[in-house]
Length: 175
Image (cartoon, rainbow, N blue to C red; front, side):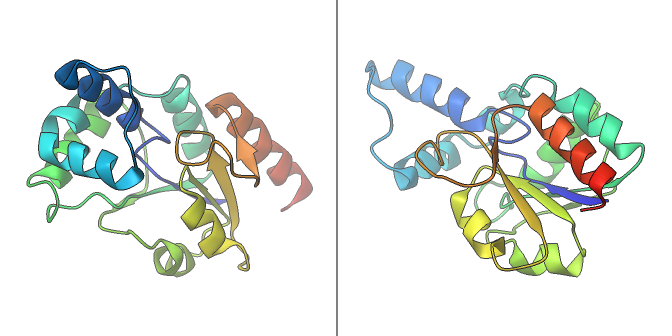
């Protein structure tokens, strides 16, 4: 199988760290008012957030297990235009985390074209816009449950072990 995986809030808990910093800096218990405000906060803190976010539990183990029998492509909206040095920082982060992959693609805010070019079978992302984008294609898009899609109904997994089980079922059934 050819599997695409988003990085932020899918492999690592970017928004969680940003929220913790935001609350600490602003001495509040309130969450971000909007998705745009969250992105602006993350961009303003640049590499600090991206270098220090924690992997989701079992992400490394599942990705590396899947890598043994599948092709893994990381597809992210991250790019140097928004945060200088983000590409190098991301590559270093993934290397130090021990995550295996066949390719990585930056600056993909719209992921449809990249997913189609790579002929992906599956795309795992937390963004419901990506899910909608891939809905009427041959690519099985799976939402990783998180802050962007709490109220969204779609094909979801709430953790990496669920994703692994879903992929195994798909491989067994040939889908």
